[in-house]
Length: 388
Image (tube, rainbow, N blue to C red; front, side, top):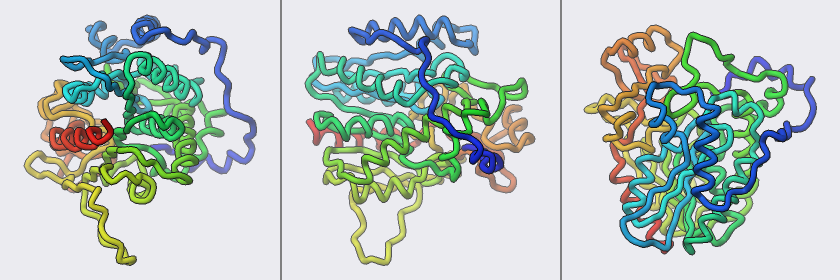
């Protein structure tokens, strides 16, 4: 994820504290979710570098939104997207949760939805403030509040819930409690003198209609800070409310074995579940019984040309119009192999994987949907039902 190894020797020369939010970051706390949504849409319209001719769709995909169940409900869930993503990343999850009777609100993290450069000065504290504000708004109308998040958003959700015992339960997708990148610790210092790890240029797209493809160094720094913040909490105390965690073994972003161990030792509720897409974990040498709360499904499905699952794909239904089996967006920039990228973009047959995977004789695009989406939804439904 982060190509910073060559710069580590320079870091000893750097000192100083994290950047502070500028006056331009100041904003009024919204009185209602509608106020927040309208202000966010106005900001997106002003700042966004639109990627398609259909500006109204792009605006809707990147703005906060609410999905309501058919009948009245006392329970609501706030969903938080990941670094570089948008509220659209929960489009299938939100609909599914609303069908389970939840009022679903999907927030927009500061620095997102507009253009990657808007992450240059954003701070973790702004994301944390957003979570506090949105939970407070939910509580005005709904007594039973839940949180969910993807990657960085999962870090924010758990960190908040640990300190708020009234949060009823959690749904965490690819939680990035610890990165698989060895040098992520360097990014807060690196951000002071290198604005971009990969400088923007005209050879590759910087964003799509629904997400950023490039992120400034400070974005990675705040991602790292969110992981440190949640580890400081969860490594020293148990979380005893129901949690559903979804992980894929070959995740190129997250140290999934660390998360799996945390689940075993810190997420203590008997009805919590960890969905593991990959191979079943081998028995350890301690003689301890297998954790029956871990549910495993294979991540190699040859009939669908899937070599492995991806960090992002677990969020999306196979019927998603953009990212599903027949989706209109193919994620060809799945490695640094320019020839394979070009052949993928030319429409050749591809297999699907996470970032960087390769096999002789195969071209791989990113897997952007989850063949087990309906089964996964059923597991989440069972976990959250326990908290009601």
